[in-house]
Amino acid sequence: MFFKKEKKMNVPDLWNFMTSLNKKDKALFEELLDNDNEPLEYKGDVKQGGLLKNKKMIERRVIEKEEDGRLRDYTQYRIQPDVYEVLKPSYDQFYSIIGD
Image (tube, rainbow, N blue to C red):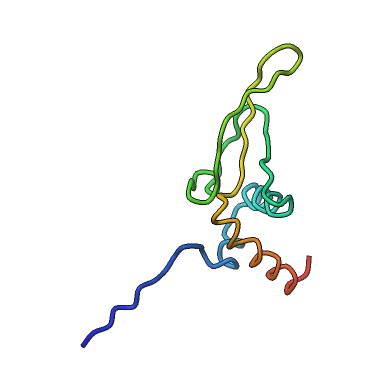
């Protein structure tokens, strides 16, 4: 009788994930976690790194805001809500162990 071990990859291992990010993606990810996943807004479009291309982790949408009488595009980023619920406690524990 053979048992096949299934690997669950719902959320990546936090240490490997955090150390594999480039500086730009890591800064965005940490800022989202530190601000309780409030959407971050950037004027225009932002060149996407690996994290931003991963639509399973990051939610991206373009909104228009009036500025100086003109509509301008802003790009909003936030961590997918279901992923955030799992990652936030792990992130807090991760940094309580290694210090900031």
